[in-house]
Image 1 (cartoon, rainbow, N blue to C red):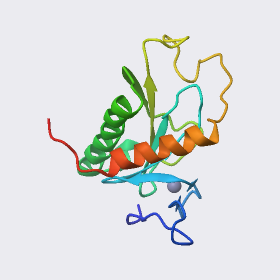
Image 2 (spheres, rainbow, N blue to C red):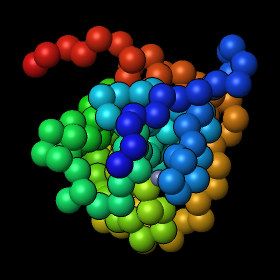
Image 3 (tube, rainbow, N blue to C red):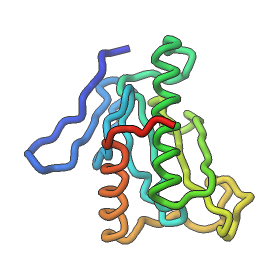
Length: 156
Ligand SMILES: [Zn+2]
């Protein structure tokens, strides 16, 4: 496991990005850097706000992590889920960690609502074709998520 890689930006004002030196995972438009992860929008108009929460260092399974890092990684995913509830009006969320396609350890955090057309489907079983968000919607969503994820947390 390598030390934490901070998001980098080629020019001031560019969205930060992250590239894993081990598996070459590349994240563009990083929304926020949390305790031990980077958050990136999964551009999916079926689930506006769907995010990936990627560990800030290379690992492929949770059991590779120490208990402290694993707990922080889970807390980061829960923080993103909480923000999706407020920013996207989600009634609930799906939280999944699969690792079947992308080796780099990550959580899928998917906002869900009671009014959806296919509420009992997982995002992977959804019969609708995954298409990108409208650019203005995507930009607005990234801005709102970035503001919410980087603001000081309110303790409940
Ligand atoms: Zn990696």
